[in-house]
Image (cartoon, rainbow, N blue to C red; front, top):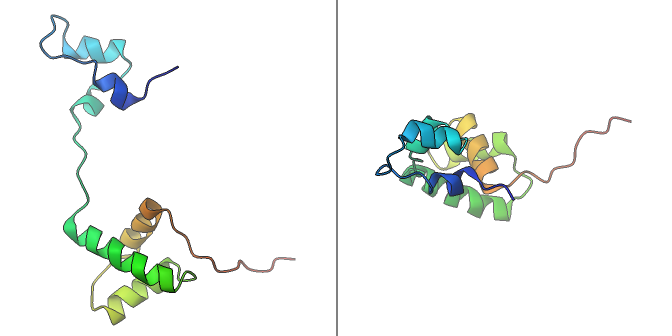
Length: 103
C-alpha cells in the first residue's frame, strides 16, 4: 500500500549521512513540500465560518452570493465572494436550491 506524502515526510532525517535532497528523491517527495509549513486559518476566517455555519443551518438554500450579501449588508463586514466560496468548500457545504429546468 502506498503511503501518503505526510507519512513519507516522517522518514526524512536531517542527521542522516544522506542529504535531504537525496532522501526526498528516494521517497518521491519534492523538497518544497518537505519544507512547507501549512498556515492555519486566521481568527477572522474561523469567526466567519462560525457565522456562515449558524446562518446556513437556518437557511440552507443560501448560496455563496446570498451569503456574501448577508455578511456585507446585515453583519457589516467586508467579505469577498472568493473567500466565502473557499470557506464553503472547506466546510463541505453547498446550497440546496433546485437547479434550472432545462427540459
